[in-house]
Amino acid sequence: MEPEQITVLLPDMFQTFLKQPPRINPHYQSVKLESEEGLARFCSFEPSMRKRVNKCDFSYFCAIAAPFASRARFRTICDWGNWVFPYDDMFDNGHLRNEPEESQRVMESLMMPMLGNTANLNSQDRLRIVQFHDTVVERMALRTPKGVQRRFALAMQGYCRGALTQIDHQFSGKIPTLEEIAMIRRESAGCRPLYYLVEYAHRLRVPDEVFEHPIIQELENLGQDMAEGVPHNMVTVCRRNGMSAQKAFNTVGRLLERRYERWDKAEASLPSWGREADVEVRKYIEGIKCVVKANLNWSFKSERYLGANPEVVRATRKVHILADSPPIGV
Image 1 (tube, rainbow, N blue to C red):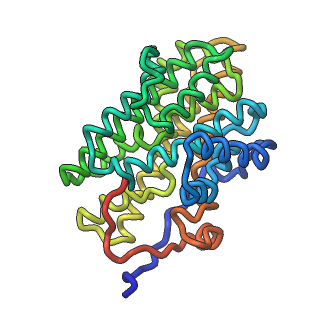
Image 2: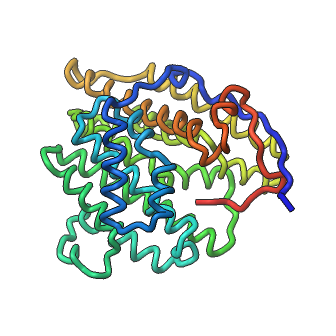
Image 3: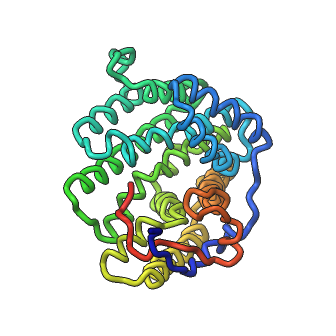
């Protein structure tokens, strides 16, 4: 017997700068195939995982996130994007889903080269998918400012921390509040590392002190929140707290509306760091926008969240979901 479904109206997520059609990196098609095949070969993926990575098409996401990247640097960002899906899947639906201690060890091994611990990089205990990420880190280290590398490492630490928190919640059966899951998803969704991958891919030279400014931090956080453009986890929390499906989507829609307003206010309040620095800062902020655009447009192109006809969902904003609230994913 098929589970019962209902129809809900999605909030209008294509607002402010998200109304603009995205630019797409011209190397998308050719690099997509190279990146997927390189990852699959390095990690010895089974045909089923190869197919899932191909269908996910995270290279399309990366093509919008880094539209001006050179072919070589676009390949690096695609490699990371294609990597993060099967890596994250180990903790989401894979063998580490209910293994918090082993998950901790895998995350620690992932962070080793980024934290300067290179003594045990060739250990047989390190998974091939972890070793593939080492190649991304190595490429980023070439002719890349130390500040970019440091920001990427800190963002990856946050990603690992957020993912482990969700695993702990799963293991303990804890249902987080809406605010808790919003804060966890800021880290575990893997959005912040993309900011610095785009900074690397576009060869930006943003002064390090810029990133300490509260306005820049506000824009980064809002970008992460808005990049949760198909907010299934937050909707699930609302439904678990007694809301109807439509009310849950409306509630999350209002949260997004407030973030759009905060974005416009923050962007209008940017200070100046000098003429040359300001040009680079503006490019960085456009990079944040591109990451948000990438997530939203990729989500409405992919069948991962919206079913077999995502273009119809985008046009009508109507989507069919399970009548019963599903478990909270990672």
